[in-house]
Length: 178
Ligand code: ZN
Image 1 (tube, rainbow, N blue to C red):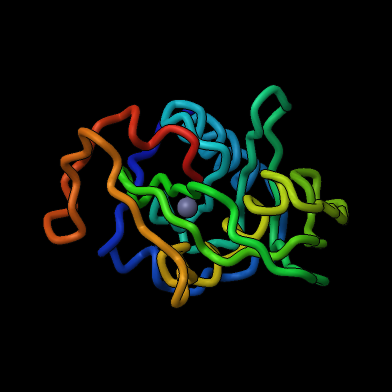
Image 2: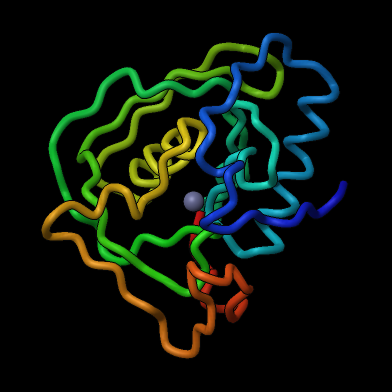
């Protein structure tokens, strides 16, 4: 397994819609292993392949206390309701937290790492939020795009990162992002 460097806001890789995976093979499974390793090292709860510069529709999720898992070609099939969870973060926007508009209920269809179809439903929790966040990533969308008129973006104490120079901020500031 290899820890891959994470791309930051301003990197064009984050803005390109990723390509569908045609065959779930060992190459994809190696990518997933690297992504899980990279996510855990960065203390994130999710990571999408474009965040490490790979333009494929692959995401991993690692919620606190749960076994990390991968979703390939994830698609939101149903969403309903609206909420603004507190303090969403992103490993590609270190040092900031925001309040994007998210759905209350989310259903996602995807393939697992064996290539078998899976469907996940979540409601009003971190999983629901992370699913929308990661599917956004493979579409080239970042949470800062979803702040809306009432959303806020807050710089965390001690963070020295800015969108202008893309330099790395404090490691702890990135914790909990995805
Ligand atoms: Zn993110």
